[in-house]
Image (cartoon, rainbow, N blue to C red; front, side, top):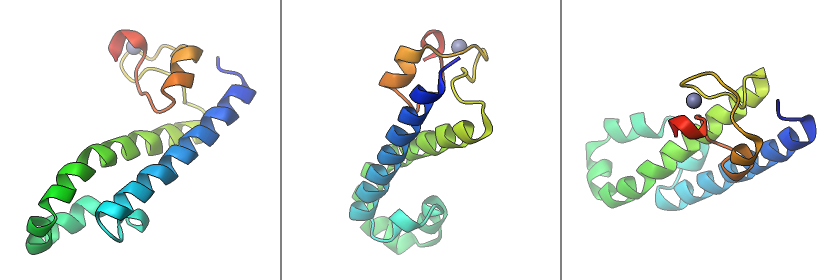
Length: 109
Ligand SMILES: [Zn+2]
């Protein structure tokens, strides 16, 4: 099990990453840093989507990352953080510290 000191460090790291990603998304597509329904908004406005096609392409990976970070923070909240989603085994501390948002152990990365 990951100890509490490491967990609070990881939480701080994840929160920093979330802010950073939201900031980057906000620069690419104004308004998204406060909107978690980014995908739906894009789908609803074809003209905007066309104009922002490039931004969307850039934003895609950021949104994926943001989703991972949010999921990790959720798991920290409910105590399920640090387990592989594939096999359910604890993920190594070193791996969590290097990649705090990871969902999988090294075998299932
Ligand atoms: Zn695994």
